[in-house]
Amino acid sequence: MEPRARIGRNRGQQSFSDQELQHFLYAHGDVPHSLDTTKRVLDELLTDFITELCFEAHRSAQLAGRQKIKIDDVRFACRKNPLYLGKIQEMQEKKDEIDRARKTLDVNDDKITKSNVKALEEEPLGDADDDMDMDTRTIGGKSSVGGR
Image 1: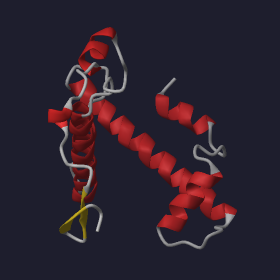
Image 2: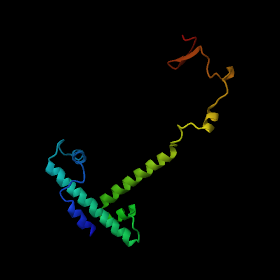
Image 3: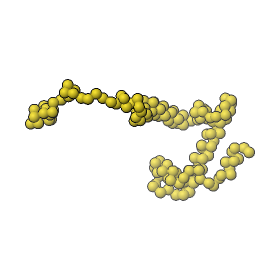
């Protein structure tokens, strides 16, 4: 069966939840509680848009001899609309930034292993290791002796 014909069978059923649609509408300037008909129309429009975009991207992937869709196929499908291309580019840049941040953060830092335990063991502190005398305190940027 043609994939687009399969989609026709699900007409009347919402793809997105009412809460998701309501948040989307409110974020774009609608009233806090939209009409049910407004939510249904938006759901149908979004579903049709995403479906058509995916079919167009799939066609591009097939022409390239691939079965899986890549981000370049989606970009090619949006080539006639610079707003969509700009949004895709913006989202790709944010994704790259998040990936770079994840690489710099080592998720295994908080785990203690046997090799880390030896590194954590320190030699006992002596009198030479004191950083500051106990009776010298800083108050308001000025140093005072004996806490005065």
